[in-house]
Amino acid sequence: MESTSSSSKRSTKPEGHESDGSSSNLDGNSVCEPANGKRLKKDDSGINMIPESDNSDASDCADNSVKYAMPTDAFDETRRIHTDESARDSNDSGNLESNSMTESEHIVAEEHATNAEGNPTTIHKKASRNPPGIINSSDEDSDDDIIDIEKVKPKKREIKNYDPTPNTPRPKHNWSAPKSILSRQYGYSSKYSPDLFRYNSYGALHMVERLELMYKMKKHDGCVNALNFNTTGTRLVSGSDDLHVIIWDWTISEPVLEYRSGHQANVFQAKFMPLSNDSFIVTCARDGAVRLGELSSEGVCKGTRKLAQHKGSAHKLSLQMDSPHYFLTCGEDAAVFGIDLRQEKHNKLLVCKNKEKKVPLYTIFINPHRSYEFAVGGRSQYVKVYDTRFPDRVCKDFCPEHLVNDNKVNVTSLVYNYTGTEILASYNDEDIYLFDAAETDTSKYVHRYKGHRNNQTVKGVNFFGSKSEYIMSGSDCGCIFFWEKQSEHIVKYMYGDEGGAVNCLEQHPTMPVLATSGLDDDIKIWVPSCEDPPDLSNLKSHISRNMQERDEDHHRDYPDAFVDQTIWFLMQHLSRSRRRHLEGSSERDDSDSSTSSDDEMEVSGVSAPQCNQS
Image 1 (cartoon, rainbow, N blue to C red):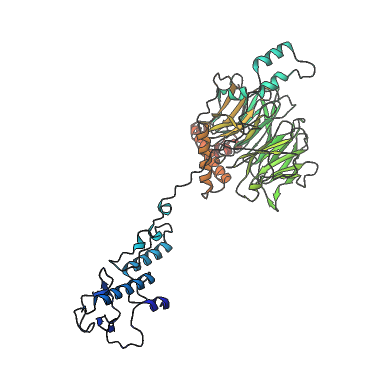
Image 2: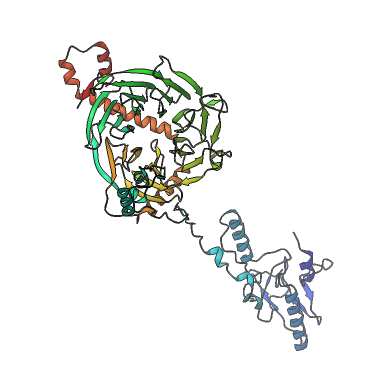
């Protein structure tokens, strides 16, 4: 496109002139000018001296030599006029073609086109449009020649802060052992409970900070998935992938009773029935069965029987602490069963649904102070609260506001606190949230606890302390974390599993003692006997690494965590079953007295049910 403004300023030949290749000078003398629009080189004075091309023929100029016939005054006047025109035409000075570009301008134009398509931060430096050899006085101070250093400087990658430590003050010690011991010896006034010393010491920060490993109890041949103290705290029951149930005297680290559970797959839960003199143990497993083990007063197992059958895996069961007969179970079939030991058949209370879609359930817990109320969680982001008197409707469904639209998170475990006023829920590869059970706005949570990983296996979560003063959970990194409930600070962390994950944590009902299990085949007992305060020097880097790994995993496409966990457990079970099958093959070859039912169980890698007392 031609520019009319610039062409009017140039000293080019008007359209009405004949193309004779010459133009009239100011004093009438003719100066040779090239034809066909060819440019002329200039000397320091700015006057066209010789043709730019060395290949100029006779047609370009009548005479190849340039004649200087002008007087000195005319020469000065010509120089002045030409300088004025050059100043007015600063953009195209010295260019005889109205729409032509210099070689440097072509280069700049190509660079601009490349930068527009490619790297937007490339340096843009405008080249002068003066011909080669002509230096514009304004070029030295031109803003166009200044390189934008900020655009050239590579941007540093923003370093994300993964430290989840809250800004609240760290909790302080609020219990004095000498004063409490002195008060206990002299006695309390009538307005205090005689058991006040135990309550206060159990929830003291000193007790949590001094926890250390007392010993390991080994008897199982597989991952220990279930732990439960009896109401007095004298016995501990455990269930494992080896399909055995063991009752322990944890004070001396010795098994008291071992029996076959009767399940055909991994035992997920085993609990003493309350107020039954430890005579009944209920279990649930991956095979979906809910079974009852009856123990005699002599310390032997009378046998086991099936109470109910879920269509999917049965992960958890919950007891009514004021009843020796009734408890609830949940399974991946989304069903909740109410089971009464005095009745022959179980009662199917409800099928959990979310928008007409069944929700597989992984955890259930009964309110300790309102036995008609219970909460469930599973493959959904909601913690649903039901009433056994009206099981066909959901009383409340708690979920943090930022997780409402996140369909990838699931509730892996939940518990009520000791008064039933708070619900603690752990989400897979997310944080732990504390809800107020009386809150009407179910999207609000009271506290949020960060720093652990809950991705590889289904992690449990629990309170610690006589008044639920602390939160504890396992982690994929093999550690056990303790958070102070009010401040959300991690006050203690310790390595609890060599296999890499702690799944089950059970607190003692009356003392600051903890039992844990995970991928290892043993059970660990922790007591507050450590003389040194906890070393938290590496805590920040440890939990920051957990948060960074979780953030990186969120940007990758992984299959469902529970699908992975199911496959992992099945592979482990098949591996152990095959090993037990090979180890017992020689014995089976020598034995001809086994029954047909025993033979079927042997083929599947499971030995016949038996009760052992030790």
